[in-house]
Length: 360
Image (cartoon, rainbow, N blue to C red; front, side, top):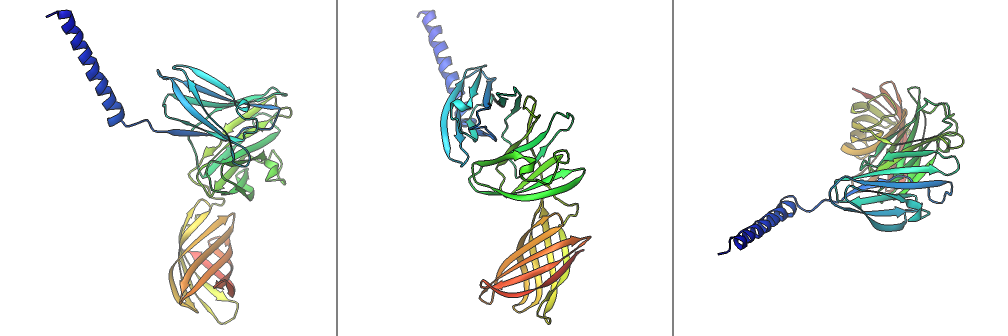
């Protein structure tokens, strides 16, 4: 037997075995590569004085393919296409060449060796800014402004809703350790809002605002800080920072609250006990209401909000075949909430009155 042929056959057999083993480890044990996504929080579509660039670096030894999807101001998809980056390579895309009106976007990929950076260039002023794109999304975001340079004369944000549901967002302007102002906005799915601080807080001077906190009803949120000097020759952009939670006031409302409700009819009243949980500015829990026209009500679920010192709570329940809705508005004073309520039965006004509850 020819030994060279035998050695060649053995080598070919070993190659086949190793190939099968590699396939088994890659696709059977490890499974197929999992898709990942990073979002593009802000693009300057329609603005001729700005350019947007996406830089993609591949640090791996295999080519990597990504899918880029872009959306306009209404959340409508205006572009979707693939790009391939060579092994150990890089690619820079001028995003307005893909679509000139895009406002936000997303990048889908499977390779773990890819790094994405988003860059902006002001054509007239010459200012440039760049930051890393990550997978971070969160319901509570902090936009942190820097005041080390007197050249910065504008402080703005871009806040994007990456989900498909409309987001209700509470914005807070902070300065000198206090909440200076707040407002509520809505952002449709796959859309964004963008502007300087005065768009939402017109009564505040730019020097007063040190931070803007956004607390959203949905978790698929992201954004960037946008700061510039007068001619945009100096730019300072940075990603919004995810926060675990945010409460606009120092009081922690989580706990057991005891108090009393008093009807405006002058002869009806009873005890109230609330078991309340606060998560950021959102309130949830159960309450017991005694001596109502429908008996003693136990473990009624409620939801609410706490904005500054203003506490709003509402609940809905069924009793004796009736649908009963309760709405209350109160003010936190020290350790007590004082306010008024109104009650609907089958959609019609049934009772109004006042209440107070004190935390144990």
